[in-house]
Length: 335
Image (tube, rainbow, N blue to C red; front, top):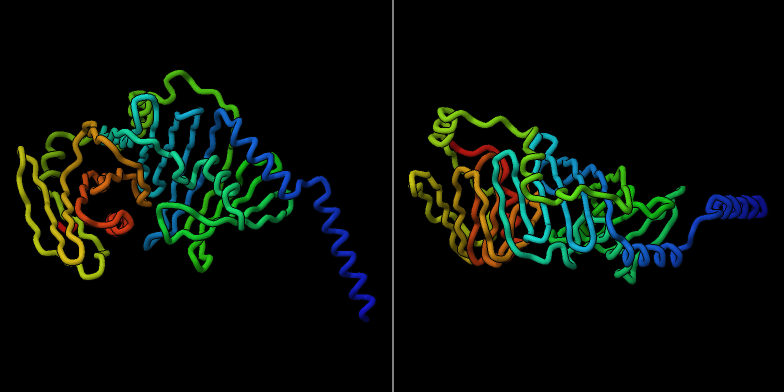
């Protein structure tokens, strides 16, 4: 009986070796990834992104364009709401564009710098190369790396990255400390050495191009009625030992604003008003993914647009707490 088990075990090992015949080992894959990172000039990728970090999943269609050294265009379309936002980086700075509202934020930043982004191929490579405790395996014709996660959301602790034989990403799972999958990415149409038109990273082209399928513009009467019906969004999450101490509606230059003030261990203010079609200049900032929208983070504030409303959160909150408060404000406004 023991001899039979030994024969079966040897057969299984032999079959595994045959299946892996022609596959690269970890050292070869890591070496090629390092070389790819050094020589990467441009790429395009389409990604299906699913976020499980809120009360319900958020699904995005993501399109990534990159041209070395510092041109980026990341288009994120919320599938449920059919609304697109774009993170754009060119010689003029970094922009967060909301084309259907003709709204944009402009700021100076070295983004993405060394700050990992889930949808950037070079970020995934750097995570693999920098993790001395990474785990390597082969699944069929896929190379699989398990690494630590280093994203803004500190609940994301682990990630698993699948690469095909050409070292193109095919899938990524990002997990919490208990290995629950909170973020899923499925890559398709990954193209290295991609070519771009001269104005591919131009702000006007991207505002106009992405706006072609945007929501229809409201008439003057509809816009007036919408302004009269400005509701108030409240955060479902408040940091410990913090509470709402004041709420008021003010009128500034004919525009209604709702101001919520919180006090306790932290002090912060949330200002809400109807989004205006304009470009907002901010000296320094970083794009931040809130799950339902892309915001702009500065040292003391977080700014984003949702459901036609601009939100400004300012105070002495740590950045992680700012993001947690903002993420909890998705939902129907109280009228």
